[in-house]
Image (cartoon, rainbow, N blue to C red; front, side, top):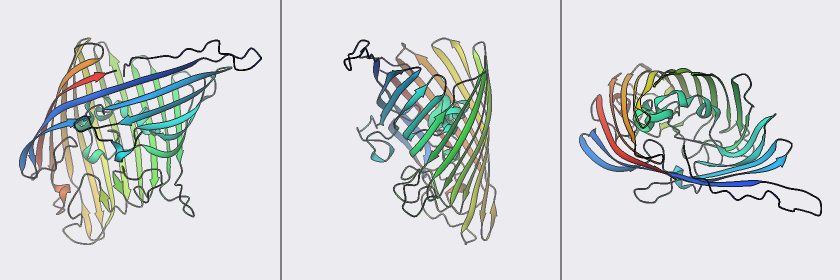
Length: 384
């Protein structure tokens, strides 16, 4: 994201009687993403909505860096998410719900940060997907089951990022449960690696959360997508940029153990045959790309096939989702863009007796009453 930088330069600040110098920079930045959405079927009726942040997430933030010498620097970043339609705070009402961390960076040894952060799967893998690159909510997987649309961030997290060596970059994260007597209750472990060489980019990633959505002080709390005994994500993707075009393939596998809820599903989740769910599994296969007609005009497109395996004590169900997304973006300037988006989703119902049987695009006003749904969006972005 491009941003205007306001710097406070202190190149000759006298900190003591000795010749000690430091240089500090502080950047204020932000983004508005505001538009109108149309859903052809939301709970049986069509809907027009003004919505904020569907694609890039409306935000403002402050980040800073102080040179400590010998290639070391102290860094921090706080980032607020907000709803431009009504001024409300995002991310469960947090003041800095998108990011809030502090750390130390070294040109030789890498970067270590602590606080609320994105996990390595988001940092290194999601950019190879439509949802994590250009599409946002219209390009996300069903229920954003792999979190490539950035539904949740990680609290109480320690993250290490390696220096880039011969095109390779790695990340590792551990997030504490912060629960007395429950060290493994709602904790997170994640790691990812990326290789980049010219137009080629490839990444693999892994994340596991024990008891996501349980309690109010763990790694993933009130912004959790799933609640269950565990969530495990395995991701891999490859992309290549050539000339005016970029083409990528992304695969993600999500397993949720003993699931009890999903942020995008309402009503009864009890399967039609009764009993209780023992696991939900989603395999997402996506091909996506962008083509620049000219530097300020591009088209994005994606197709995602999702195979579900929903296991209960009384039987198993295998729904399948097909999702197609398109976006046309025109940059009026370096800071201001106009775009139009559209998505179509069809679910091959497994007749579970729940909302798993209905199409539901993340950007929609609600679940469809049928197996099909269409969403379109016209919006404006301004960066500062």
